Picture 1: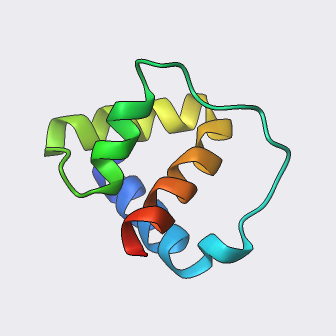
Picture 2: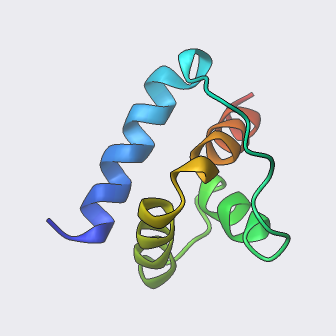
Length: 76
């Protein structure tokens, strides 16, 4: 599977489950990563950036909590 497909699966999961997604808070991602996740949550990331973020999230799954909050805030 490619990274963009993985990210699509993750996005669909978070949209369905975000109220129930909880875990140990590892803090926010680094300052340079937060705007990238915010752009993704807003649907403003291009294909190359979505692929890069999929890889980043594989390496740092603790960032999923921040991404879930960002998606929830955009949906509200």
